[in-house]
Amino acid sequence: MDLGIEKKVAFVMGASSGLGRAVAEELMKNGVQTAICGRNSDKLAAACRETGAFGVQGDISDIKSVQQMLDTVSHKLGDIDILVTNTGGPPKAAFSETDEKMWEAAFRNLYLSVVASVQYVLPEMKQKQWGRIIMLASMAAKEPVKDLVLSNGIRSGLLGLSKTLSTENAPFGITVNMILPGFMKTERLENLGIDLDAVGKSIPAQRIGSPSELGALAAFLASASAGYITGQAITINGGYTHSIL
Image 1: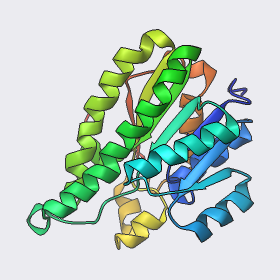
Image 2: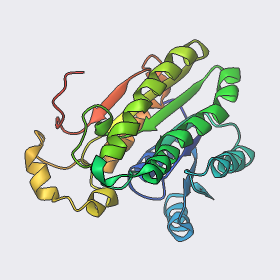
Image 3: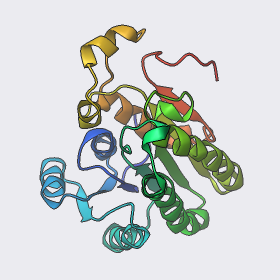
């Protein structure tokens, strides 16, 4: 299927590994000029060598760093047509284990980085009358996960932000959607100490998801064919969540 986005410019945040990298790889398969970012220079350099993506090093929890990365990508590749925000996950914790510093750090990383990057790309997207904004978050935004209170609390706020942005920018040919992954085979799951085999058995699909499956979904949402899909929060979790909305 021709996605109709060849030669478009994309910036995928947090894409030196995991879900972000899977999205970047799928976009590049479809001819998109893709830039990725990451904090670890060695990891980022390896990802760029292996994928052919353009890399910019920076810390998405630092707003100035976000803006500098976006400037670099725009100067190197041109105006950004496709923005994929991917912020990674905050530490595992129950509410009683958190403090103000943890909440502030999680808010900068999960929320303010998204706000800053969207503010940057919107003017040019509006001028072109075309744009795709895809926010990667977590199924915790819709259905809270035990001991992930930072993610549960902040990522649910992104639902309101994305819906508002989608309504405001639909007249300009800009779509705004969220992808809410469940248990996917990434370093994040391993770091949380989750028994993947046990979790897989609890999922209706009877397995953990693959990053490439999420990458394919993101690429379609970025496509020309998806121009009438906006304001949606799409879960990709093998049927794990129980809600009907």
